[in-house]
Length: 166
Image (tube, rainbow, N blue to C red; front, side, top):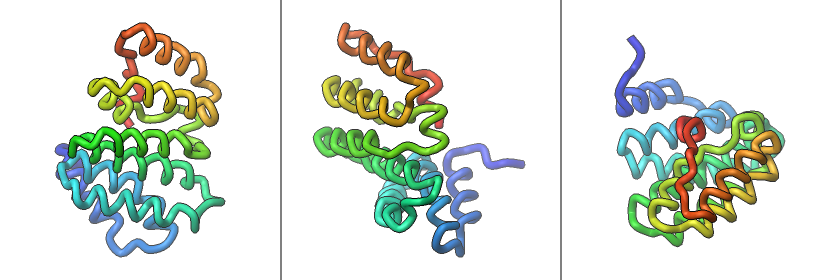
């Protein structure tokens, strides 16, 4: 039976990655960082996210490089929101938006959870900056980015729907 709770999913991901080194570990770190955060393992999430960002320069030619930059900053930003440090969270959001992209980000767009959390805290200007950065890699999503930006400018909450789930 597959793991169902966030804690079980994280435990399964850690078990899968146990003993991995080099590129194999690098490819698993985005998932480990996200799952650790979702499981409430904040220190582990922070450690995996930092490890991911430290390893990214050594893997700049690999398909997962853009995901590493995005998700390392994404997880650290969510941790900063949780800790009440919105300035730091905003910096991480912009750093995530500065990713060169990846096959996944270029196709499906960015996860908008951190942006949504910052919007809820009144940080609309930084979210608008982030949406502008995402235009560089999410070419097929430019219309969606424009709609979200228009919603924010008019004081509405965008429907990030599908972009909150990965």
